[in-house]
Image 1 (cartoon, helix red, strand yellow):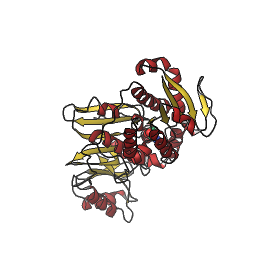
Image 2 (image 1 turned 60 degrees about the vertical axis):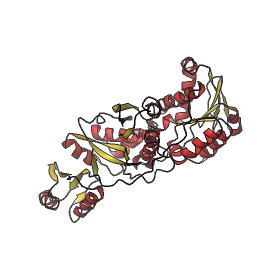
Image 3 (image 1 turned 135 degrees about the horizontal axis):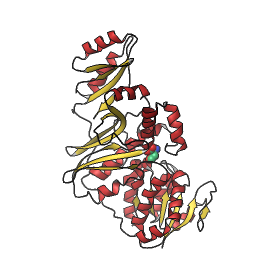
Length: 400
Ligand code: HSE
């Protein structure tokens, strides 16, 4: 029998306890042995499923085989995870902040103590992505990984685009549904997507886990319904995209609001869904899609990791030829930018004169600028220099 505790009984932790209880028969069959929920650990007393005990004493869970860490953040969760792994207790988590900041150290600790540290749920919520890369696709050299990896911002963009909802109204809905981080800036400013990109790069390219701040990141907090209307006029949708690719012996990436045409495979990934495309040298392009946030989808991925450990199938590969992160470099990009002005006709003429290789079209009471292909930083400077006098520019949207 595998003895399990859940540490942190919030949205995700309670979903894990529910799944362990409701699907006990399925889980026993898959694990090849009973997986028993023994403790739920939190600082506030919480109602427990039948047969499980509530505790607020951390030492109680040191006697378990596997502990599910649902505390979140890199404070108490970090300290507790280290103590568990040092004691030889395997840990399963959805904590992307902890994994992306301290994953290498925690994996090394697990290896040294003969236990496991698994984090499938840290990317894509319920969408299987890390294990398929590590197992089914492991014989491929993966050149690119790109997707929508933040459910709450995808939910916000969908509600704003399809229902014309305001950003604050859509955000409070997403909060109620348990999609949003304790600090919503982590979602809307793109840090959550950046952390997930770092974890994807670990799985796809063998990159290190430990700090993701070097990845250029623009979130959606500056995107408005009017940018979405501009995109619609081009038959496109705006999504927050995380992109990683191999570059020489290293890898590079970015997180940015992006313009997706109607035939892009990720355009129809709506609401809280995530979609991730992986490009492998033998397999070609593979797509993964499903619920990227929320209690039960995340619990689904966590319980999958629990089962893998319980049936003795989890491995602990040593890092090999770790590629370093390299700067974006010289690849040209195209941007879409919304332009507003009191006198649209003269703004139109001015912008067309300043950027003769760009396309400028009129969309209701604004202009929609599609730049020529050039270096990102050069385009940003050109756009900044347009924004003077009566002309106001919106957030740049990357065309992919
Ligand atoms: N806030 C995260 C998201 C939760 O919206 O994707 C799942 O990681």
